[in-house]
Image 1 (cartoon, helix red, strand yellow):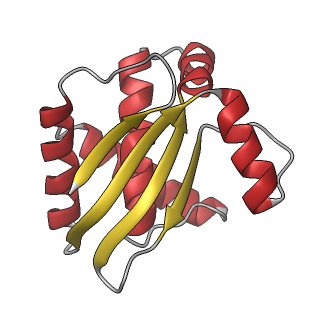
Image 2 (cartoon, one colour):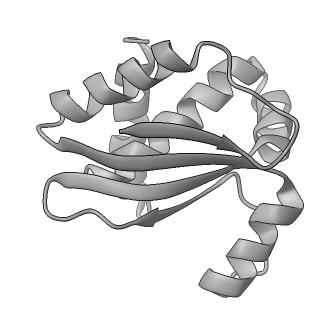
Length: 135
């Protein structure tokens, strides 16, 4: 089950549509949907998680904690709404498009895609683009 949680004054528009889109992505990637929690928060909130749990002293748009068991996906995906807004401006895309990219990016990590190397990053970006076209 996909759930959306808010630590700040923000709400996704049409949660049901977004949830269906994520579920369809998981299914197309031949994975099984477990419990996936999206938590929308501020830069400060996510920065603290980044420092406390990952020892990274940087801002980021997303942190995902993966509790998947094999192909059954479970986890918590934290998204900084502040960072998504700034990135949308920097990349000259709409906030909605950037938010969708970050949302699907998190679940693609659970499906097994990485983005540490240049080649992994290219594959991740192509998968994001593919699924963005299906929303």
